[in-house]
Image (cartoon, rainbow, N blue to C red; front, side):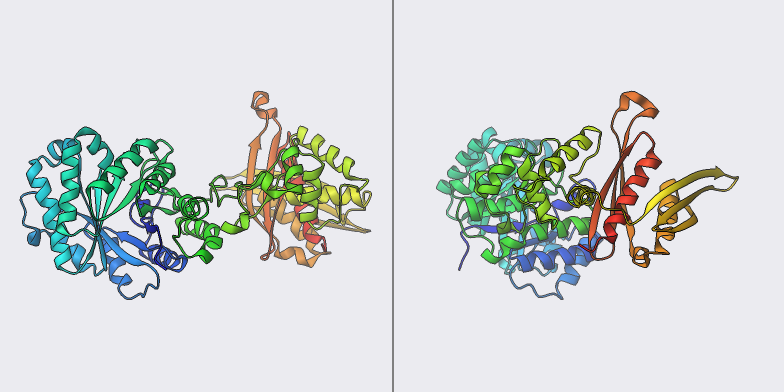
Length: 520
């Protein structure tokens, strides 16, 4: 079935212009294949005339078969005062071998006069000549009207003339671009309606997020009749980014009730979002709408109590529709429902009638008041719940003493840790060196415990974060340490708090090892 709204992804071109984004050719090919499998309709691979990397990408892409998407090469209209057949940039667009070519041209009279520095008539010829030439070479041509909205507000008649020039030359789509990202949804909708009323070809929309309205503006244009939307995964792009497709796609499908990507792909949306972040070597933004880990997170006690009874009371959709999940957070704002739901998620058999529930809640709130934080330290919280439910069972081990030292010679710094642990009647002493005091302490603790618990040899520390809780106290301030650990199959977080950063780190390390030893 032909979609009502076509999705045009420009992550590999416009998205790569974002600060901190740098894709290799291999990265771009991996993302293109993922986008194709997801079901977007167009993948803009780059500008073959701008750099060797994009030329290489298109050379490699020719060898791949795309099942759902059409690959697009991006470029501009011909240069002023240059016959189109003699323009090297246009030649490279054709040589890229893509079925689709997207070009941009000037809409704004301001840009024509001050940037191109050519006559209005020459700009119209540049648009028409380039579109016509590409069509003559069998290309599906998408014309991006740069500064379409700003240009229209400055000189409506000339803006329309530029759009008509592309249409008359055979453009398959005329895409209105809010290039500076500064328009309001009402402006976008009104000008989109003008374009639809004056042109016979299909209209698309390309927005930026400079004032936080990239997605809202795209949706306003679609409501006004546009049938093609351009954007990037996770909103990558110059300045504050492009229209975020991980928001637009579910909004179109679930809110506007229009067909776009295959229905079965929606459940893979979060996976796609995280995949692109991973390839870009960026931490996933937990606060992304729809696909972020906080998008369906509940912290306030009243909210959690309501969600426990009726999920839709505080959730606009079922998180699973976009591949996400509900996340119940534990903090000093928690109520009994928070504890029950989170404990059940962690595998504890607990209900609202469990006698120990009040003690668990009071203990967690008191520890939060002391500086502990359990949203990212569920393993530490699980140990608290277990201890109260089982009425303070004996720990599998205890640290009787430890010592950490640092010395520096002429060539390097040396960190060394000594640990004594007790496991039942056995006492294990161990000394280890490390890249820093916490690394040395971690190595010594794990080596000592591995004598009684060999499985701990597989545990690795995957992340370590420090937060100063009371900056006013200076070097005597409390420090919170969050540690993430892994056994290769699962990951868990633990927390420690102390005025002594080494002590806080040891607390988190001990919790990590204790949690790793639990059978359930």
